[in-house]
Length: 120
Image 1: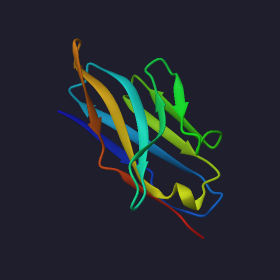
Image 2: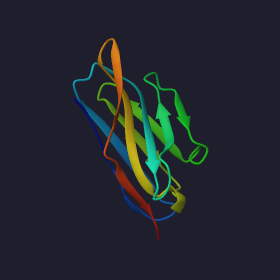
Image 3: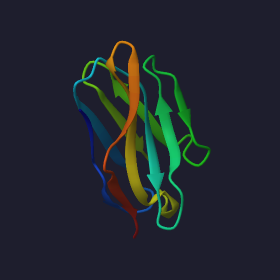
């Protein structure tokens, strides 16, 4: 089985920064795309940022220029650096990964989420 574990959430003031980390473990041949999603109370889960194995990135318009996604293919980790945080960024942040457990098959996995609160 594959597990994704997020860390780094917490309480931050508006304008502050947080760095989220996601670590994948288990039977992993390789990981294709990795991404960060978020879900605020009463809202649907939305994509925040994603990164391919080769390092190509994609960001939602809401976070472009403020958040940076990165990954370490050797360690099976993905980080999300969040700067200039706004109250609207408050949500539970989830890590997602498309994991190859064998060379010919892959599946999507989710972490349990980490809470980010932005408040003064």
